[in-house]
Length: 110
Length: 123
Image 1: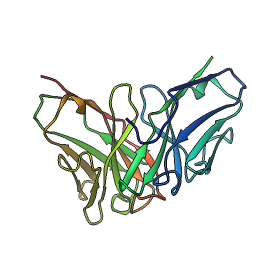
Image 2: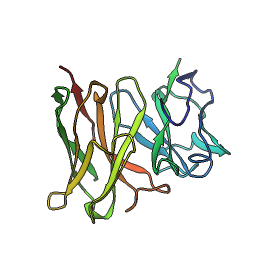
Image 3: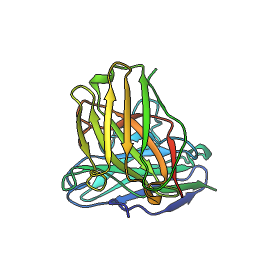
């Protein structure tokens, strides 16, 4: 059972915009930064969004992060086949004094 | 470029211990914390803990703090994660990841990852 809550799967067609949500509590998302990691099948996760809405160099601006209260969202616009992956949200938890993750959302591009 | 190369697949019996290594290159090992995560089959990521190579400070997840030990060898820029008292639900891919800062706390992130090490626990 993950501390952060994500829907298990979403899907979209090429060119479409999809959003992936992540829900937590005041001890994690409500008080700290949210991070998003992309994991293509059979590979290690890769940083996608840091500190709520910042993109590392090399990450297309089709990816954007936002948040409000104890929830956060990752939006992917202009969906492409190479975006098929599992997306994980993460945040520091003040009560647990450690990092917590969501269960991951699998994105399928139809 | 930054590289984190982990040791190979392990198969262990219940009750045994496993040690996974993570050899780094391409950056100053002692300047950034190292963290460990695992991913059970079909599951999400789970944070195991962090270590600051500069002074050996460790911080473990509450769930595993009695069974996990993280160490580093600064002479070889290698981090180690040992898990004791293995159970079947420890079966997972274990990842090391370098942090963006010295502390690896709430404002940091995991910016370089190892390739993962599969640990299977089975009688």
